Image 1: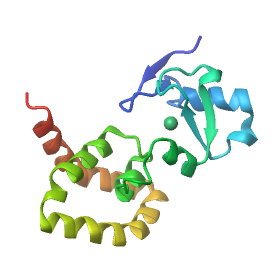
Image 2: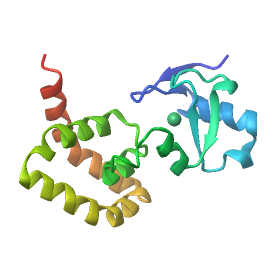
Image 3: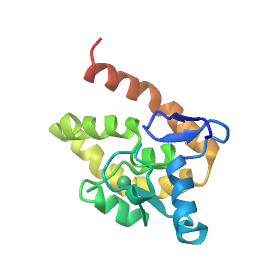
Length: 153
Ligand SMILES: [Zn+2]
């Protein structure tokens, strides 16, 4: 039995390779070709239930539909920077957008222009690991601040 750990997004990874266990199980179960660059969905919603019966290979589009993401427009840049729309950091940004930003006229103007201008940047970031790191570094203080507001200690 290989050693594993749970990453900060709640997924199990192998300690040796840092690879995601559910992707490994899906590849073994359905084959490398079926998996390709597609995503793996946990049918019961439990990210740690990596039983083959609980895993389903889905396209990114299908996956976002399952999780109800395309209806609420997403943080493209943050999604590109964190490599997944399910990162804790992005949830914090979404909460901020829906609870505070959208209550002010300037905030709404910002949100509207963001969704027009950000997709080309997001595509650029997606392909470049240095840019991903840079964007995460720029977002970190905002996320830390928002996080401390949500969970006062
Ligand atoms: Zn899923």
